[in-house]
Length: 632
Picture 1 (cartoon, one colour):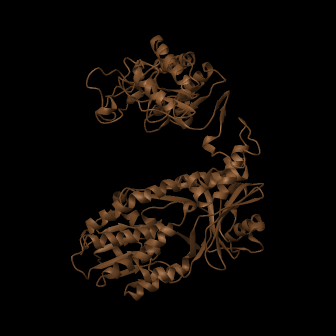
Picture 2 (picture 1 turned 120 degrees about the vertical axis):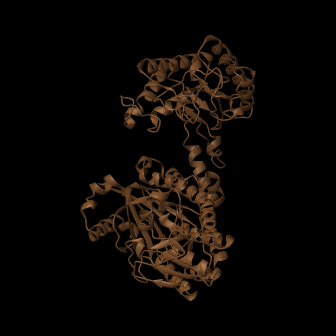
């Protein structure tokens, strides 16, 4: 069969796996185990037993999947495990531990040997030191599993199909080993005259740990690491982390400083070729092992193959449909985690306990409640620290024995003190008439104010008639509106202590649409008003094309925000919120996708922010200094 065919019709069909890493090995063995007649060959560029990584990490959930997929290799793998449940943080001379995070680690080299032996036991041919420079060199195969890594030749060859996106991270990192055996997943933060460095460390056998050093690129350059050899870099890091290495050195295995590459592809399949593991996607190392994700890919591919009796088109579609949503969730969490470490200098003024809590919750996958279940003592300490640190109502010693959760501690912004940190906002009832809020708006806000929340926020309120999203949206741009909002504010204030905030907005190119009950962003059939935007780009198919704002338009919109802010103060609002999101007018200036201007309001980020910041500054100038002004 040729490379363009996409269905295995013969049970003795040939499968070629490019890449002898965990993804390729595991996919091959699972397919062969379920279909012994398959002729599977694995082609690996490195020598047998060679690897350029150190340890790999797995979670409980992944281990369950391994057990179900292939019990023999599961037993061999788990026999090699080092298991821990704590995360240690060394920061500003303090050591903080949070438990309940169960992970297992093992040597990457040992994992590869186990999987290689299992493949050969099942009758799979493993060929090492095979360098493929052109896919045309490959012998005919019915199915090609492209597990050829982050620098995938397959992905490059068919880039017009896979449409890959490769994004380089901003931080530099280097992957070392050490014979200092850590007893947990350990984060170490050390600062010297060149800047801040962090180490990500974890054990993977009884005598070795992974030791990843990471820093900002400017720190890396100030330290001269960009000019150092592999040995000189290692010596620099050994000296920096000497207190943490306890007399041990660092180990190098072609350990060079690199930037992390996040790989994404529009599709993972092409004819009889399927991408697996790092060839298809990567996720930053700070959220766990890429090996884990790759082997989960292998399980999904093998299961899909079985479900569709070797129909490759159906198999690949099933595999990608199952894995892509999971991978994208992991990549989103990894991006948050990566961003945290790339910007960790922002947080170095935090108290060690606060710093550690912030780091543990950095990806969004772990919350305060998750940590409370994993390690109640740690979160109790965080809660007591947080309660004691609040200037609004400093607690007594007795209060700190059982401190309230952070959500229920007071918050002071400017002269406004909220009794807790709970805020609610309603969905627009769409019942306003010519921008005039009515009983429906009042009823919604009053209902939320009675629930004990500290702050209720209005729906997005238009600063002008042309700034409304729908005809039923409320506004604040005339005397009648002021009177109506003043009444609503008084009712909310009388309901039990809640404060009320106004969300000011201009719809921009998302305006003149039907009420949401008729569908989102559907243009009005009749009675539409002219729209304004940063550039003359319609919001969606069938949407009205807005006018690109000229100087007079910019001045008029800025003045509309100013007037609305003044009216909001007269109405008695406690809080003002400028809406700079969701594709509305101000957000449209910020995004390069919606702002294609060639003047001082377009181009660079600084220019794109110019008009939103001008609006903010004008509003801040008239909004009372003692009242908070929020932007979101």
